[in-house]
Length: 152
Image (tube, rainbow, N blue to C red):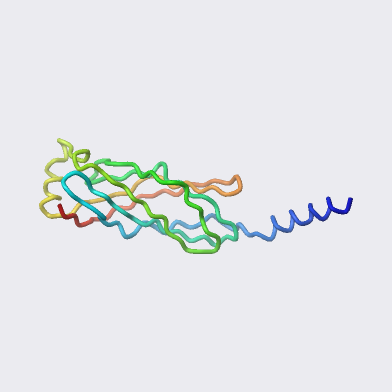
């Protein structure tokens, strides 16, 4: 009989002692770089930076994040759910591989050829990253553009 009130008290103390003051802060995307490039494909890696001030983690998902090369949509970032650590700064790796023939567009061929000759490519990550914790969810809007060097 005494077990039930002790159990309820324990649950309340755990719930109210863990602070969830705010959602993790999205700092930005940095270190966009080409990992591999050849005539068939280009593989990019970028780091999404976050700060989590809470005692509780959560889960981040990147289903709605698209990658554009020279303003032409080329791919969608597909990754597993990422477990958010509590009280830490952390990064999520965003890796995408794109076939070079999929970024060739008749309207954008001059821009692509110019990029290949200068060995620079404008890369844009655009979309949303979703955060979930204990039934609460929010989204982060991502719109980051950088020029990266490529070697074919």
